[in-house]
Amino acid sequence: MECKQKILITDEISEEAVKILKENFEVVIKKGISASELKNEISKYSGMIIKSSTKVSYDVINNAGNLKVIGKAGTSFDNIDLKSATRKGIVVVNAPMSNVISAAEFAIALIFSLVKKIPSANFATKSGSWDRNKFKGMELDGKTLGIIGFGKIGYLVAKKAIGLGLNVIAFDPYVSEDKYWQSGIKKADTLEDIYKAADIISIHLPKTRETSGLLNKTELYKMKKGTILINVSRGGIIVENDLYEAVKEGQIGGAGIDVFENEPCRESELFKAENIICTPHLGSSTAEAQEKADIIIAGQVKKVLKGEIANFAVNLPLFSEEIFESVSPFIELCENLGALFSQLAQGNLEELEIGFNGRIAGLKTNFLVSVILTRILQKYTTERINLVNVNLIAEEKGIKIKEIKNSQSQDYINLINLKGRGIGLDLSVSGTITGIKNMPRFIAIDKFEIDMVPSKHMAFISYKDVPGQIGRIGTAFGKLGVNIAAMHVGRKVVSGEALMGLNLDSEVDVKMLEEFKKISGFTKIKIINL
Image (cartoon, rainbow, N blue to C red; front, top):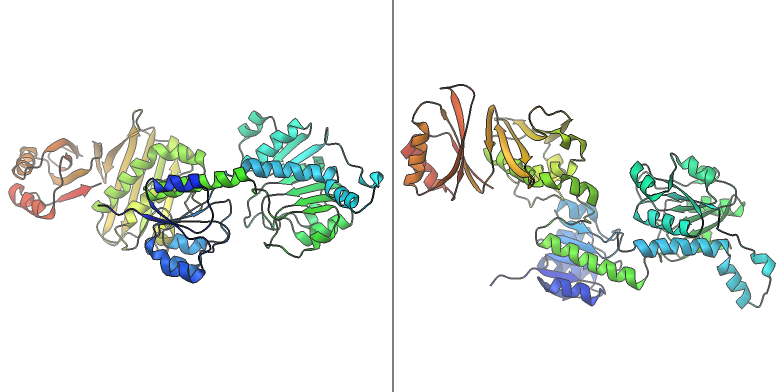
């Protein structure tokens, strides 16, 4: 009886999420597990699901000999040593879409709280004051909201704001013109366009090297005087001390801050300002968002453990659903080309040139490059290698990867070509896809054109193209009990050197291969198993 893979859950997750996992896996729940216990036990598990209270450190990952996936039931992953997990080939997944509605609603709630001065009015009233003039608010209708970061949350905030009578302008250089056009949102070409137009600015950016400290004193003073600022995305995008000074001096009219550079944040200059609302990262703190996060992460962990590609893997080379869909027709071809190259190659691989020709050249192909490399590098290392760590391992081994794109392809709509060089190695293979099912085809090996559909078992034979050769090959395989499903021949000139590709119905082992060579007299043969 096959043993089920084990999943460790260290925090509270929904019963529905646990039920999803128990259909295929053994689930162990240990809420509040200590760091030392986690380190000692992690080797038993193939998967792990955590929330914010569990830290997955280098020591834990170093002991995780069988771990394939870590799932964080939430949007962030700061409590996971991502570099160590990547190096070990462990997929890290999160649930970035779980809090979209909750975060968007919270941003709107902060806007209302600030413009209507609700928190300070509430505090004053409960303290015995009844000063209505002190808490005059502002109408939103007709005002302009600037969105910085027009992803799913930014888009949803924009749509809700339009319903409130706000004009909306958005800035995001990574979003296509079509999205602005389809949504009816005005596009800002620069941040300065937002600063000039917006009465309220809502930030919806990831924390990256480029966005860290983006809104500093210089940027804050480019905004309209009295601008209201909202941040429910990531701490550290706004320089907190600069924001405090800008509010104190009246440059910024108020701010709603749900995220901080250091969390949990127990002390900040921002706490001193009456017209800055501070909340403890509540953007996704709704029952619905938590339930969604749990179910999403259970599905993602299940996918990885069943050998499928997770939609929300944070350490895979890509990743967006749109990009994945655009390149998915080529994944099987890339796997086949990588496996073919790896098994045909002799010598040490030092340089690999990957050419994308035709329509495919217009796509983002870094994911396909990783698919190819994963199949090739399995030959050159005993380490577990997958899409997560393949680029890191290629870099460590000093293999130079060059990607070449050409929108022109003479004979094929799409063409992928691999050229490898190194000591004792000079090999190229090419392939394409055909038909509505995107059927992979090998179309060239080195100098030989050969039109061949890949199969599980194949043989490639180099020989002198003279009469009787095909018969000898067929007879030899027949004596070994191996049926030839299809035969394909590539040659440059009549009676010259030729290459034959054979689709076989069964595997040819080492002993059978040696017997074939004796019977047929052909010694230049490679057996390929996909």
